[in-house]
Amino acid sequence: MTGLREPAALRPQDAEASADAVNVAATAPANASAPAGEPAARGGEESAPGPPENARAETAEVDGGWPADKSKEEAAPKTARARRRARDRRRVGGKLTLNRLVRTTAFRFTFLYVLVFAVAVSALGAFFYNSTFAVVDRQTDEIINQDLVVLADVFRNDGPGTLRRVLRERAAWRDDGVYIMIASPSGAVLAGNLTALPEEALGADEGFFDFSYERAAIDAAGRSVGEETRRGRGKLRRFQASPQSDSSFLVFVARDITSHEDLRERSQEQITRIGAATIGLGLLIGLVSSRSLLNRVEAVNRTARAIRQGDLSRRIKLTGSEDELDHLSANLNVMLDQIERLMSGMREVSDNIAHDLRSPLTRIRARLNDALKADHQQKDEALRATLRDAEGMIVTFNELLSIARIESGEGAGAMEPLDIVSLAEEMAELYEPAVQDAGFKLVRRLRPCPTVLGSRPLIGQALANMLDNALKYAEGGGTISIEAAPSPDGRIVLAVADDGPGIPKAERSSVLKRFVRLERSRTSEGSGLGLSLVAAVARAHRAALRLSDAKRSAESGERPGLRISLVFSAAEDLG
Image 1 (cartoon, rainbow, N blue to C red):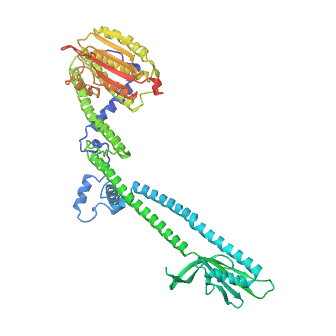
Image 2 (tube, rainbow, N blue to C red):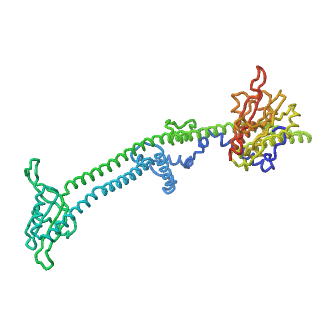
Image 3 (cartoon, helix red, strand yellow):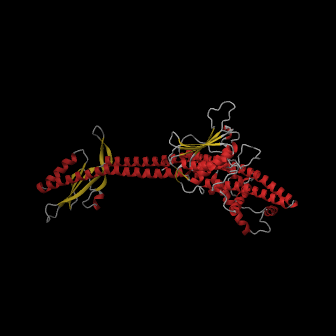
């Protein structure tokens, strides 16, 4: 601000703060003006430390061995660093090998999903098995027990002769029943359709057991066509007329379960095949999805490598699938755009700082050289002029530090409900004398507004910069207006308008950058940071900053003026 008192919140407080500002700004050009191929211009990339140039020259002179003045112990860390760098290069690039595919996150998640699915299929198969074959086994055991109960009643009531006759009749039926009656202790087979007791019965006591037996195979015409091996399940019981009797009878009752067992084996085989196919198909899907994902990740890696090599214009290509990787790539591209803007801004700022410092420093040097040869009065004038130039540079650096603090969030302070109208009224009273001295008329257009959530010092500084801009550049105009009013969409507009020459539409975005002035010669007062600070305050408050013509329908030859507006959301909407 020129010729006006700067708000206390952003004025330099002492010489120490001013010196810090000079030191901070003095280091910026050195970092920002590095050549494009150096690490500083590549977003801060760090390279592994290497030996000095003379050490490399000495190494090159020794053919096929370690340097003469270096031990192997000293050179070993360099070799280890080289191996680490080579390993890192292999990790970020290379062919899509099977080893890389199976180590991707997509394949691991797919494998885990397949494993869980296989366990679920196994549990379902076990449930199916228990719900079918276990029930069939229990039904078979119940039938055998019922037969034994009936035969025991026959033996107890009618004697062994009747039991023998009943077993012969049942053995003659061509069904699933298997019977044999053996006299003990002679071992003679008295009745049944088995020629001998199965070997499995010897260790089964009176429990159920499975066994194999031979039976004549009958074709469709009822003719015997040989023998076939069948499987059965049965139970052995001993019948005795009385406890004192020396003779007893062994009765074996069984059921043919060949068809059940065949179905059981086929079901187990099918469940195994389904499980194997599920796992195989899942692994195949995992490999395919891993390859697809790895191709997209490799596209990100290629872009990152190109940017690391200095090509800040490279961006990640979007596939248009609108999935999470597309959203991530879009966010990374926005971040890269911001980085490129910051790097370009840094180079532009360093050039402008160098230009703005060169003129006052050149004047100071020439003035001091002349003062060495001048009289006492001229020396005093030279010192006063030098002090003015130094104060101008301190103001410039102070504004830079203010913008940096605001953008980092440090200078924003506590956000609290704020009455924009009362703030605009205070700034109007403060600036009205200066506006009148400059030949303008200050017009207030203030209407009641909802409160906004913001920092009073920062918004006050932004409003002061907007008024300063109108005073400085509205040459030939007669009116400066300050406005505060609610907008139709419920937001609050704080604006400063003038009837000066305005700013062309093509230049409106560039004047918000640091050190940008429409006067290319840079001979007028000012640093080009006023609107940059306004833009920083707008970003800190998530407000919209708009530059437009003050007169919407200016006639031909009439100056359009400039209207700078800050559009805030109401505090209740943010809460």
